[in-house]
Image (cartoon, rainbow, N blue to C red; front, side, top):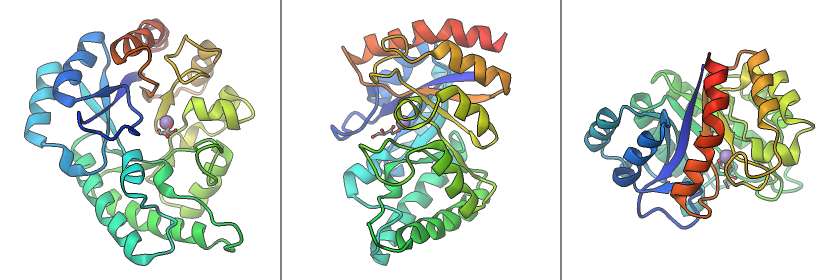
Length: 273
Ligand code: LER
Ligand code: MN
């Protein structure tokens, strides 16, 4: 069974927040009325969420939180897991623990995208070691709260650390915690991975969540990514979980969200039959 979600941030989110919708109060009801099952909350801090208000919105609309994503933490603060400065890493651990506390009530998934940080050339693996240690600490904290951390491979034009699913799985193996999984994004996979369908099938046991966008990062159906093939491959290996629409809000948020669900709903309904 696949459930469909869409990325949303607070109304005053940074321009760099990569989401379709901005404004929980306004757009959670819009996403629900379009037929989305969930919303992915893109946050820079857990304090952006008022749980009482969110509970009301979720109850009124019947929609779920699919995941909490953290790209804005990096965009807003520049903090990263690989940072050489222990004080900055400690600040990031505290921000993440609050996100994990929030996720224990909403979605039980927290992503690690660009906030993992980059690798400084010639550092002899120190950046990676810092990542592994911090991920292990946060996995232990998350496990006690029933939360899984999900690592998103991101293409080489945005970061130099973990671009492909294969690299992601190597890092998962080093961290070696049961609640550390992958969040493939088919837009990045189109740039980095040998094939999208093949790598998704190969690593499906590690896949806990999927981002969807077409080859041009518009709504699925607007570019040349073969979504029929992706979903039939996922079906072969029985993927069950969230797929989340993370696309450019073009020509405008409503049209982009509508295009995505118009294209994906028949495919997902068929998948779930
Ligand atoms: C975040 O999910 C992502 O895919 C990044 O490309 C955003 O910069
Ligand atoms: Mn993504």
